[in-house]
Image (tube, rainbow, N blue to C red):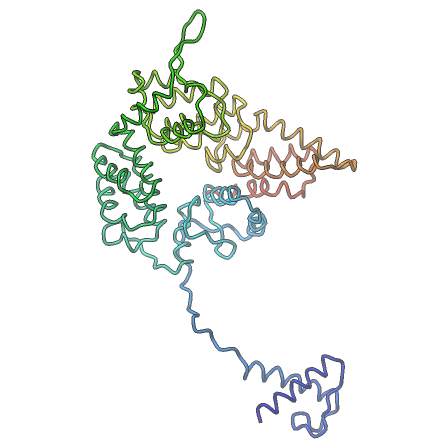
Length: 476
């Protein structure tokens, strides 16, 4: 009976979809009705039958989601959510992370229905930890980090709690890591080890030496060696002497003879590779000792050469040199034109945020900026008034405005070519980075400048700058 009824209802639906008329003669569902009314009644019966008798069964793995957790910050106001969703369409990871960080700096979080952070939360604000745990189905709790709560904590949550514990009671934090970190993945162990820069003391030496010699991750070993070098607690004299043998000390200058330390000329490829490997493990102080000089002399006399990425010697300085020696060499690099803004990002665990901002300001004012994104990497989003003023007065910003104005003028005349398209696309990227760095007042100034250059007020290039300006009223 059920199958017969269903087949008749399905046939009526198909006739209706094809423009036909239902046959009501002898049909108990439409008896006594004309053809048009019978058709409508059959369709209504078909819909009712489908909704009441053919409802899909619940999948076996479904489960109720817990309610959204209490968040540390309010979510983005509804009026700005469409603009946020548009901006998050960018595929550049730096821009996406910068936008999320910018919003957190202004005191708001993305609405969970618009965006959820990845589970590792790497590069995103800690304020999203509750949402990460909710999305992963993990239990929400607020217990302090201890031996009992170590396993229960979500990785990002444990990292945050460990960093706070290391800042207050570094010895207890180290003991917890010694007891429980061995079973963690290498990336999590490395992240916890990065927290040792706070409160680093000789008491950490024994544990760091054990990591440097026996950890299963090469990155963790190298990081432990770097921390030991800052404690001047390394035994790399043989490697340091080998590296020193690849170097020469000469004099330069006709009147004021100055000592110069550099690698020997004509190293073959195998020797160059060995030198690179030694720079990754030898400590700064050990190399100075092997060369027969004090660390300050090594920093003041080693050659500086332009590099697109941090040179091995600079990386060794960042990893293991005393801060004074590191800044001496960095100052020489800046004076010789070898320093680049993106190199400064590696100084984050050696300098305070105020010192990083000061260094960034000096490089911006000196015209050493070739990429606004590198400034974002160094100072972080919503960098403040001093950085904003420096950026709007730097050569790169003036060049950006001038190039964009020329490209827009050519496009308006119908002279668009590959170069014009590339310049406008670069302008879009520059506007995004500026929007993540500037204050709201500075963002409005950039909008005005770009409109004068030829952009229409509704141009998509201005979207991130308008978002910056609109979000000012929602800052705490």
